[in-house]
Length: 388
Image 1 (cartoon, rainbow, N blue to C red):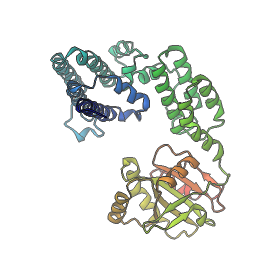
Image 2: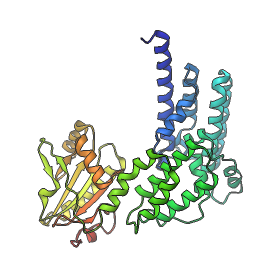
Image 3: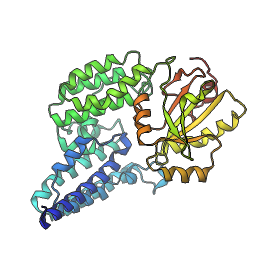
Image 4: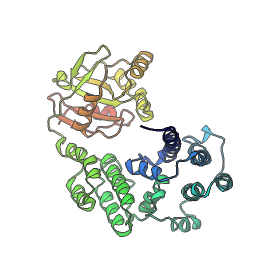
């Protein structure tokens, strides 16, 4: 039986952990970095007594990512880089003063987190040619577990990559993944940090690349280095399997989806026509930004009976999807996948993030399992590619 004190302690823990996870996830969003179970363990290692919630809220409020790095500069009051650095210093000092009033067992770990958060933001606010930048980067301890919460080990790895991979994003990222592993081998000794960085390496290499010449050139060395870390291997094996399976010209895996009336459809129902599939969700900002472009193309292609454009929502909230399509009234078929259908679709095509687009030929073979976007300038040219 759980007594009253146990319940109160659990309430404090959940409250503090939720505050940290919510704030830290927002802090990391610009890095396309998704907190893993390791991140949760790092949060769990911090004190969770009532004073800890106060410390967590203080840090989250100070390091407001939207304030320092607004998506659009005109979204917030425009500040110069110098003004942002002044604000960062003031906020760091304010947190430090607030933490001094808390018990030592809370003050010590959260002061360390404050130091690391300031270092993260300071590095990001400096120009790349700044002399101060190098000195700050040298302060990063890549094996500091708490640093994972503010992306510092990942920043360390990035700073030690010698290759220029800017042009590789969206293409074959094998060389990027291999050098990432090589840097890890040189510097990473902390098992928790290693696990988190392995996850980061696999996600970036496999989820932001495509058109791999030979995915095993990355995957085999990755699995060898991961060793007994079966969890991170299992997390991405489905992705590797899909990359190997879904080559251009191979038959597209069939899958099921449902319309707004509850009727179940299958990809194979559209055999005889090319099918361009938009996998999206109402909560996905980048997905919604593609919709106006897709609507323009639907209008331009409405006379082409050899082509079907489908939008398939991966929302878990069916009502949110219904509200949006009833409000927007899109002029092309709108479908949704339930939990089981979502899992089957994601596994078959290795979908780990959306928006995701799939292009299927009239004979059911794949033209592109990770296709071009509606916003791409050459969309109309590529949608007329009927060859597999």
